[in-house]
Length: 376
Image 1 (spheres, rainbow, N blue to C red):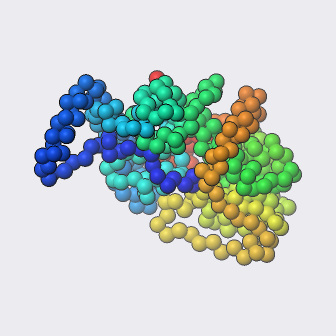
Image 2 (cartoon, one colour; image 1 turned 135 degrees about the vertical axis):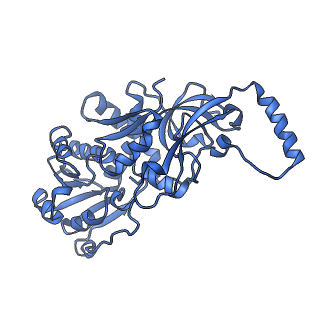
């Protein structure tokens, strides 16, 4: 999933690791001694972290990441306007690879969406004990330097882990992508790739409740059965078993596709272009099939955008953050009434996060992949 564009990461990683210089500076050393004396009463905390260890080349491997434990006076490093948090749940999604490859320095902690409890606040909008979701570190404790990017959790009558998925970024991505970008109409045919993923499952259910005919593709027979029997999809197919994706789409969508919710790119997108209806819409959320490729695949059937007057539009969910209250008003009642079926794939412990993230790219998870850092 790459529908969330991160322009900056609100995590103070330098504060966690410190700054090391071999050049002597008496003034700096004096200030450091004063700070050390002032911080002497501050608790030294052990902090387990997932570190970006080795540059990713091709497919992400567990060996690209490693566990490390640091001992820091973390509270002392939190400056004005920051919040110091204990991380509870972390989200594993395809966008994590983009953050790792392009926005994370080697030797620094991995970052991504998560749920946390505020232990200390130096920001007027947050107080000790608040629960938040937003960008945080893959570690036990984090200093969030731009807490205005976080959402305060006000509804705690649902599992907190839901804020890594259904009530967090993936849920908002599905909601905004379907209702705001796709411009659906009742009775239309909606096709969703990566339909058993965190976003795809929700798009499919939103589309069914709206009155659409819904088809999904996924990577195993088990997931195909789940889409049809548990999540209400009208039809689904296993793309790994289909020798001809064009034929599979014509079988499942004989009258063509009005809306394609794009999560994979590559050969699937090429086949979909042959099956779009006149004035169809392609909503581009991600292209997971391309993220690990050193040589990305080309698309050959783009002429159909012209011939069929198809609108193809990418989006980033941050453009729709203002709709989050409206989203909660819509989705929370649907959860309580049992209208939305939601599945989590739980990995216990921060140590499990590298394997859990790698598994997302092989389709090992069913539903939202969540890492439990602490259940408090």
